[in-house]
Length: 156
Image 1 (cartoon, helix red, strand yellow):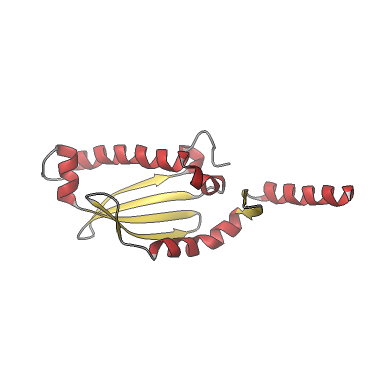
Image 2: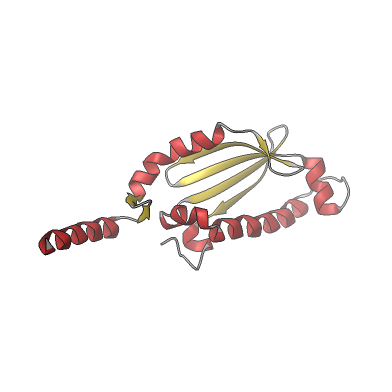
């Protein structure tokens, strides 16, 4: 029995050293298993979309590619500029950059501190938030990487 336990521990250690892994509900999930499952997870979430996130942002879709979930948003330019400037105005690059910095801090904080996303972080799952206006013109992209943005976990 002692030998069996030792062999199992060695096998688990070998898997853990070979690639990232985490334990979910008593099961070891490796990074490659997770990457294979990510498109199904994205599809499941996307089935409930589109969805209004706030007064100016609509989440349109979620996609998975390799180790990254991409969240695609439609942003109402006039409403967004009103939030930045306090009134409707032309949305300048300076305003977009200002808003991007604020939104980046919010998205990084949510991803790095949300306990329900712990397994995603451990498996190195990256997030990409792509914002376009209501006619499809790109406004900004915000990337969140647990290895560089979540210092307390470092993705592991």
